Length: 368
Image 1: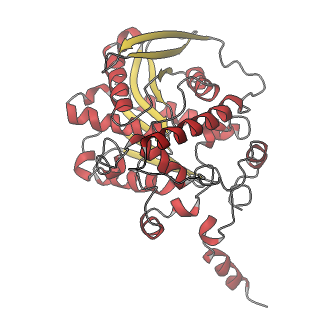
Image 2: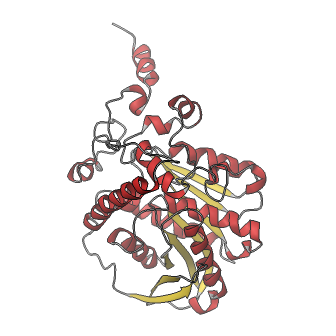
Image 3: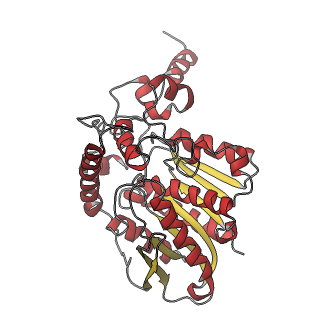
């Protein structure tokens, strides 16, 4: 009979996720939190997400890319409209003051801004400007997932601000976000803000980081007090050869198909950077930022999830921020998939509460 030490050593050497067993999905991966499993199963996302029937990427037919993006947007929009988000004793929309503003965008477009503030408070509060995910090319600003997330932030004591940026090719959405950030900064006193942080998940994390880089480059960095990027989608590495992924960002293989599929993300990438001309531009893909690009940025939090294909690009980016001397904290939440703290409010409420509380902690810590 083998010694316990040998058994433990053998178990430890088994590679995680699909690196060790290509058939694993989030519903069968032993690392997945058991309380998340029913939610994954009920939404039929406990298996490996199938790759697109027709693989598409940068340089492919724009009409085919647009059709694929529309289908992806429709599919995810249905999921977002029907996520089970309710909790006992909910009062998500009560005791809140909601103001809708419209400003002119960079292309004479209308930009709608939703400002949510707790009704029973006075004086300046931490400001959290929320930028939603969707690879910068899909999903709407207003849906139950995004709305309740911002309402939870407001109930926690923030002035939560939703940005209705345009989905589409770079730099359209980034320029919209920049215009809103500058407007909010100019109206801090009227809005009652003690600080202003940018917070976004996935593609929203990309736009939050890229906005800070843009602000530094253009000389208006004082508008942003901090960046809180959750599960950021920043590498543009989703069409790399597998060997390159394994060498640099192995979670793209380890967790591929856990809600997100690299081939599907390649289509999103083609919608944002159609021919790859911005592949090395940090404003499009912040993972490309050098230490020099990052030096002088405001404080950052990089929040990462263990079972996310994007995990390792967040880890690598956090290390580079530290190397650049940026005040940086980061953490990895074990046993959950991409965006689970945003999506699974009902299944894992304590993870949701931690995420909201940590954003509030950060927003208060950078108050001027």
